[in-house]
Length: 70
Image (cartoon, rainbow, N blue to C red; front, side, top):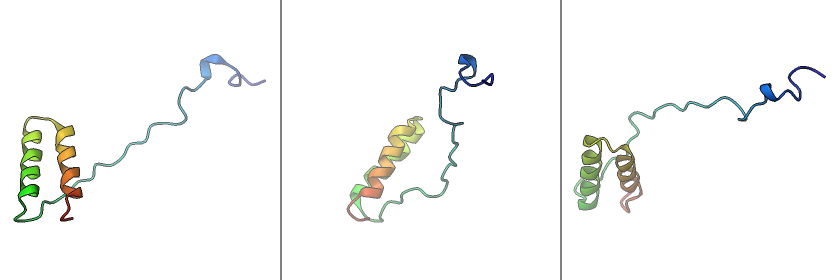
């Protein structure tokens, strides 16, 4: 039996090394011009970014993308 088979010190607790995904720059949801709903969501996104709330900014971007005009 080799040293790493059945050896508790060499046992992996994860299936493989972590995967690093690239940041998708420039693929941000764009609001429709002259749409009150899109304008409101875009402002929410900017406000969230300004206060450092990246989760809320991302959520607003998703809502812009899913808005009925899109």
